[in-house]
Picture 1 (tube, rainbow, N blue to C red):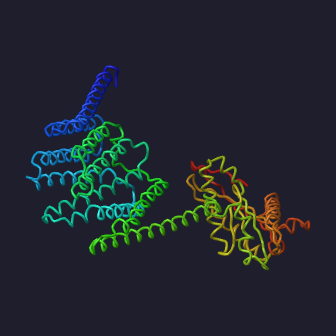
Picture 2 (cartoon, rainbow, N blue to C red):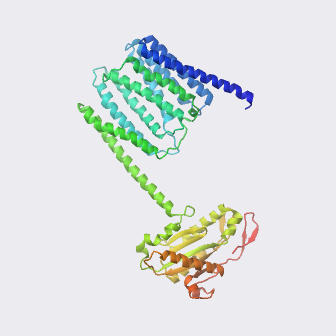
Length: 523
């Protein structure tokens, strides 16, 4: 965008902001006048001006940011008009058109609820049942309080059936809307300014409607002008929310952080405190009230128990995952070095009074492969080598990635069985590896250290040191494998497998690089 194109845009934005400032200032003046002067026409004029200002700000926000999901904003705009019409009818004619004003108001509630459901619930790729459970518990707590303080007194009033049903509908809708708001507040991030402003606006609506409900049941008569203030405050707050840049991302998928579960738990704790106060506050409840309150309390407690059980299971799963990550190599899935060093102490009954042999495996020419094809291909080779080793050993044997291209197998076998195991391991490397860079042959050298189990802590260290020395001996003399005992006794390298347990494993052939050209096999 050129400078000439940017300047009109900047001027237009500044003009819009000035108009919004004027609207907010007029709203504040109107509220102040409304509180000071009890004139019904002035109340209607103030409400009309506030609603018109909020709709103007929403229109400006939609035009400026063009959100991908504009439908909730349209619903909220329509709901604002419906709320204003219902309130205006109530202010002008009192109860003369009583069903009509309630129809407009309930329609406004429906539109607000749909918009809140589209905005406030966190969207994820897969359903989060913990979130749904927490929302249900919050809703039960809100419904329990609504029944005790609002719905039950309304049902006990001596009014017509239609008026009683309509009046009792408001607290139920308030409980559902409060559930959505509490659910969204517990999962929203600090960067979602527009969403947080909507929270404030909806809470203001709930406060105003709660005052109307209290006034209707006669529990706390409220000054008429004060009942309009929360609703008139909610309109400009929603308008400001529409002007913030984050309004464009409302309703988009967002990640729910683990600590938000603790925030939801605090809301549930408040619901439980309210439930514990019901027997004291509602000591004069009749049979129907006691049945409903008892049922809601039972559902609330069952939900809390289910939530606690899920939290315990989730904690145990996280602990197992953390333990697995601490004991295993993430590339191969084998045990890592630290877990190998603890292997003898972890399962002592398996190793006690058993012949023990440790095989130290090192890949020949791995550095050349790593340098020639890169670390990604080297990681592929390590993972494939680990898979072949895992398929050769027995289920009770311990296999670990000691580091780099070095692997360790710890098995309860004698010398002859260890030699046969080494033969099978070396045989697993006869077939070339099919990697992303092409078909790459690789060989291995194995050092073996055998001995009877001992109770000292340095047993595993001794076996690793001895097997490592034997592996270097096998690699130096181009042997497939070698026993450390032969090195200690000074035996000469031979190739008779039956006599010495050593064998040369060097398959002939030529390797192929990634371009299909042949190259000599690296040893």
